[in-house]
Image 1 (tube, rainbow, N blue to C red):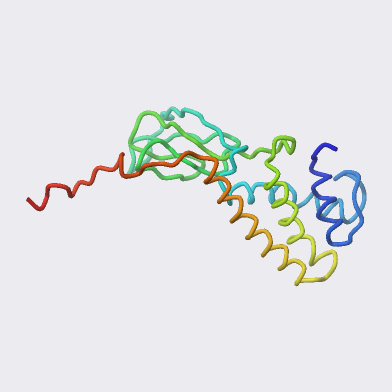
Image 2: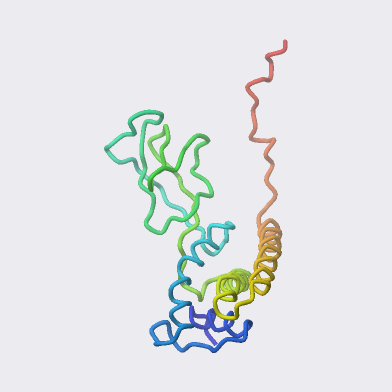
Length: 187
């Protein structure tokens, strides 16, 4: 069975004992609820962790209008941008869908709004179900405790995702690239 927005919602609905849906367009309360929260829930969950499946890289060129003060250049963010992983520079700021920096090029690594469920990580799918349960349980079942329980499970699942993500990346030697401006000051 393929993973779709409806199958993910149906898993959440099933876990709270609610009726499943066939599509977001059907004329049922559960379909309307799922349709209204699905995209915002996905985006929020993608921002919570640097999920590997949603990472993208792009080089950004500055626009011709410059910030009034503080930085030399302004770089427009991609349409699917949700979160910065790295901008390739030490000093930058995200402001009004732009990155402000004192450089002529940004090598941006970011989390994109990946809406293709087929490429989602299995842990992300589990987290999405839990997040949907957290949002749907109270309005559908009237149970705040079921909603709170799903939130706690989501937090634990995110911890596991962070641990696994850390294991899938090579160790980084921060000291090798670090050069303190204070070395040699004392003597």
